[in-house]
Length: 133
Ligand SMILES: [Zn+2]
Image (tube, rainbow, N blue to C red; front, side, top):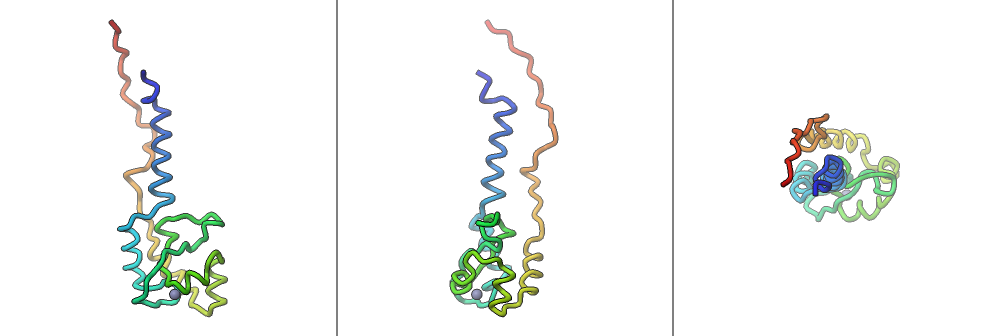
């Protein structure tokens, strides 16, 4: 049976994997890195407190669990922000929204996902059909 090994099946599996790894996930190592880069709560700057993952763009409005969308937040910021739109919320809290956005842009320096980029039609070697018998 060849069907499970067909080009279409492979592409499907690849897409699924990418969804999991790049679009919606954050490895423990990445999370550590993020905490280190921010050095404390991304919003109020408090350090030395337990930090929680906060989605800059709430999942409810299309935000995802990725490096560029996760920042460390102290418990109080996290609870207060909840699903609020981040800039509006920061303004209400009197936090430095511009500094935050600048910082976020730095942190978000695009990480080229070379390993997993769809290779533009890499023709599969065509194997001649082996004669049965
Ligand atoms: Zn905070």
